[in-house]
Length: 185
Image (cartoon, rainbow, N blue to C red; front, side, top):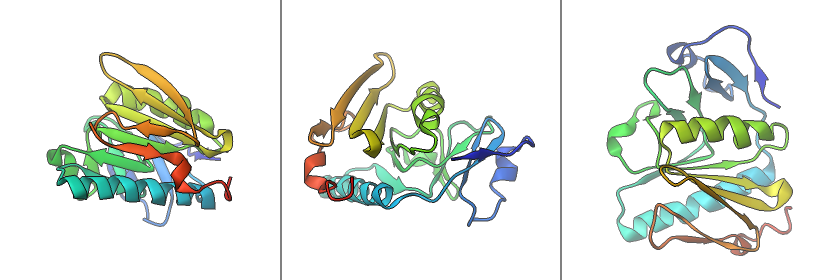
């Protein structure tokens, strides 16, 4: 479970914590994160590979980054998140620290120790920042929740047996059944 530190922390201060500490900064609070599970890492690796392969095959301009990769949603905000997967299509948002501004697509793999963080806190932060598409992949509940954000907010829920269309691409579908996660779930 993530633990919050009491002292208010700015984004500048947060960027100076040691690299070996897994944490996010949410509205000035440092939230420490547990090490990811094996299933978490398997899903992360598979999805990153599929997305990167699609971008390379299509000669796309978007870039995909797996965690650890810092995302500061706004320059004037003391929030620095570390989504499991970030897809950024505007190269002007990328800097040496990570991404400054809203990525186009974010995937979080739900943590069983703190689901509120992904389902409520981050959903609201990403929606307010202008993220176009947000997925929560929940291995504990065998579900994928796809949030299309912007003018027409919607949510669709899928299972690990389904093929899910990526909204920011015309021709990218992810077949979760093909990821062969059954022996890990």
